[in-house]
Amino acid sequence: MDPLLTALFVVSRIVHIGTAIVAVGGTVFMRFILMPAASAALSQADHDGLRARILGSWKKVIHGAILLFLLSGAVNYGRVIAQRTHSGDGLYHGLMGTKILLAFAIFFIASALVGKSPAFASIRSNAKKWLTVNVLLAAVIVMISGTLRFRPERPRLPIPAATVNSTTNGNY
Image (tube, rainbow, N blue to C red; front, side, top):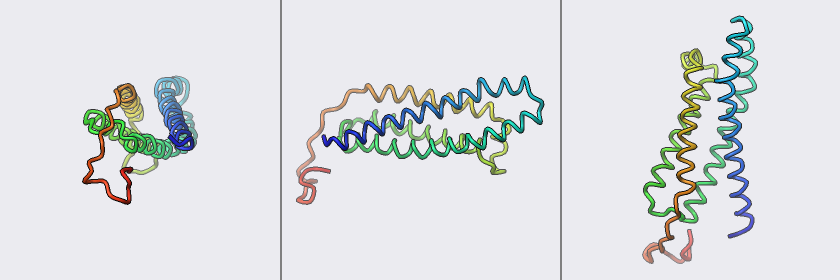
């Protein structure tokens, strides 16, 4: 494989996993450490002020994380498709599709929690519940990812001759 492509794939995996560590770790911290401590120690006015200051910064992290997840995830899955390592493996692609859909659910909830849209005020008013939901969804994604990571590669199937033309020379 081309060394530049190998480097791209390595960097993409590092970015994907590093982004997950920051986003999920931050969510766990906010839900299970910060929220209980702030509720116990601060007046409602002070708690609201702290929440507003934290969300101003956290919003940038969440939006950046979503962008990095989308870019690195596309590169990572593009490698699987291009290298045909799981060609014809319906379970692999079904689990990957489930993982992607769960990630979009997390993106939506996280965006609603840091946003200001009145349409999602009910989500923000029940932040404890929705942060917990995101942590649980992230745990399911980690389980799926672990399963996919160690799923054996399938033998690469030959490309049927009828689909090969002179412009691809048998390559995609």
